[in-house]
Image (cartoon, rainbow, N blue to C red; front, side):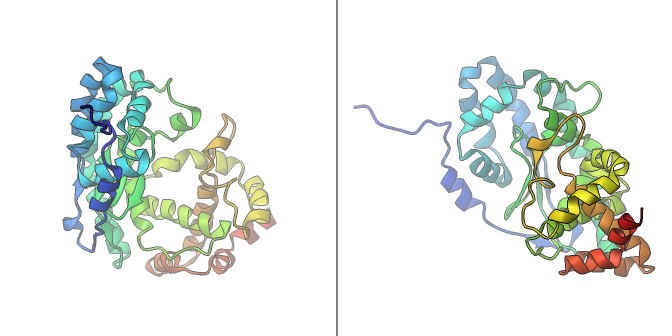
Length: 320
């Protein structure tokens, strides 16, 4: 008698979601777990998956996701709904890219001391900060995400550099792909979101929160992180960007400024709201003599229009 069974490559997404709902934040940097073992698992599974791409979904299901950390299982359920075939297609469509990034992704583990050093520096500047565990994994360009289980950080996004073949990536994927040395700034950005106040739903609130996370991450690490390219464009077009931003800033539509990857072109990057928010926060910070107080006020602000006014950034742009 033939039994109807779900394929093994669709691995109980609902079960994974219920298993990965614990939330842990700690004030102790030494207690933060930075888990990179899922990257090692991926590279064990990858050769077998690529030898027979028709079976790649099954291979990744059995050798990667089923053996992975709680963070990887949560990622699999949320991003791929438990269907390893979708993940396998994303990987197999970029064979030259994946063949070239193994050393960079395995180097994630070497960044852990620098990441923890950044956390300690952030805590020195702002003692109330709390930290999540972080899982570094291979995600097939589904994107990093913050979830109750911890930060789920896609290693592909910090895998570029000399010798990496990016020809199979889209324009925005190529442009967003940073180096593994960016990780301390990238993950510090995410930790900043732990202590910010919720924004008010306006575009202004959204760009200040994101730009603030970039600004504080750079303040802590000395690195511009994953959005350095926005500053190259923004510094050359700052007044123009401000003129475009002002009519929209009190609205609730972020589509031209945040998470707007479809607007990426060779001439103009997407996500320019990060730059605008960064410049507002930088302007505020620079004019407050007590830098610790300035940082605390940035992180604890609930009134984003008031922060903009006190930054004098709008006045500065209008006077040019």
